[in-house]
Length: 467
Image (tube, rainbow, N blue to C red):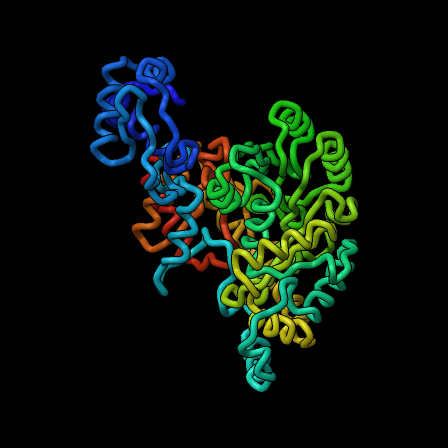
C-alpha cells in the first residue's frame, strides 16, 4: 500500500479510499480479495485506525467492499470497470499519457495539432488510395465480405517480408502475422509474454501510448533514460539487475518522441544485456518509411531470436486503413495467431487487400520520396521558428517528423499546453512521454502540423505560463 499525507487532495480518509479504489480498478485487489485488517492497513498507510475504519465504512456504503462479521472486509464480486486514468497515482489530466491522444483525436476541423503523431491528410497518397479502392471494388466476393486467415493475407505477408529484408531483417512470410495496427501488435505480444505485476521496460521518454497500453495489462512500468544513440547502457544494466523485467518496448529507426537514431555500438550492447538477463525486446519500427538511410535494427542484428519487430502503414499510407504486422520467431507466431482469433477472430482482410493494392503500385515509392523531402523541408523551417521563441531542439533528427524540445526558463510544458488548448492548439507536453515525470519543461512538436498560427499561440502561451 501507499503512505498518505495531509495534502490539498482531500482528507486522510478520502485519500485512503482513493488508494483502495485505484487498487480495485487496477485489479491489484480483484473481486473477492480480502482487504488488510484495520490495524495492518493503518500501519501501511501511516494513518490512525479510526481513519481506516471510516474509509472502510464509506467504501461499504458505496458497494466497493463488503463487511463479513468475524472475518473482515472483502472486495465485492461486482468490480468496477477498469479505468486507465485511475491506475497509478491520480494525475492532472494535462500530463496523463492518454491526454494528447484524446485531445488530438477529438479536435475539431479548425483546431491545430502540432502535438499529434500523424501527418496531415493532404500529405498522404490520396490518389493511390482511391485507385486501390476502385480496383478493390471489382474484387471477388471473398475479398469484400469474407474473414481473413489467422496469419493474414499471404501476398501482403510476402511483400512485408521483402520490405523487411531491405532493412536487414530476415523474416519468412510464415514468421509474419498481420494485425489491425501496431498498437494491436503490442497488445497481442503483451497478452502472450507478460502477466499482471510483471515488469516491463520502456525508454524515458517513450511514446506515451506504450504507457497507456501497459497500464491496461496491469504491469509495472520502469523507464531507462534515452540518449542520442539509444538507451543509456549503464542504467539499462542496472535496471535489468534490479527489476528483472520480462519485456522491453522501444523504437530503433526513428525514436518517438526524441527523433534519435540507435547506433550500432549501442544496439550490440543492448542485445548482449538482453541475452544475459533473458530479456525479450519489442522493436516498434512504425516510422521506417520516413528514413533517408536505414538505421540499425535490433531485429536485424538479433535474427528475430529474442527481438520481435512490429510495424504498420498508418503513418505514411493512411491512419484510417488499419493494418500492421508482427515479425517474430516461428514458435511464437502460432500462439499469437490463436490470440488474434480469440480477440478479433479473422482480422481485417479488406484493409489488407487495400494496403496490398497501394504498396504494389509504383506510386507509393514515389510518394515516400516526396514525403521524405517534404518532411526535411518542414524540419528546416520549424526548428529555427522554435529557436526564435527560445525553444531548443534536443537534436537535429536525421529523418522523421518529431522535434523534442526544451522550453525556455524551465517553463512547465503542461501549463503551456493548457493555455494553447484554449486557443484551439493541441500540444504534447513532455511529461506525458516520461515514466519518471522528468520532462516537465520539454515538448514534442510534429513539424508537419505546424502552420504559422502555431508559433503565435506558442509565443503567447509561453509568456502567460512564464508569469
